[in-house]
Length: 145
Image (tube, rainbow, N blue to C red; front, side):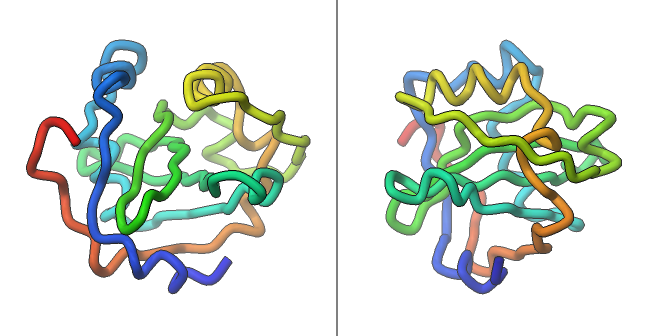
C-alpha cells in the first residue's frame, strides 16, 4: 500500500460510546492509540475484504514506552477513528504470513470484539504491508468528538 494515501488525515475522531473500552479492557488509553501513529516503525495494511463499505486498516505500531500495539482503524473525512487496540501478541511480533479470511462485521462493536480475541497474523499478511507516515496528523485536544 502506498504510504502517501494517508497524507490527507490530520486528526482523530473518538467514539463517545466507546471512549473508555480500550482502557478498561486492555489498559490502552486513547492518547496511547494516537502515539502509535507517530512512532516508527509503523506498519499498515488495508483490509481489502471490506472495501465495499468503510475502509478498514490494521497497524502494528508502538507507543513512547516501547509498548507494541495492534490497532484497527477507519477514516472519516480527514480524521482517523481507532476501532480496536490491544498489545501485539508473540506471533504478531514475529509477523509470519499465515493469512486467513477476515469475517464480515455488522458493526464496530462486533469488529472490536473479534480483534480483541484474535491474532492478526492469522488474517493479515504483514509482510505485504508498508511503513506509513501521517505528515498532517495532530493529537486530539478534545475528550469527545
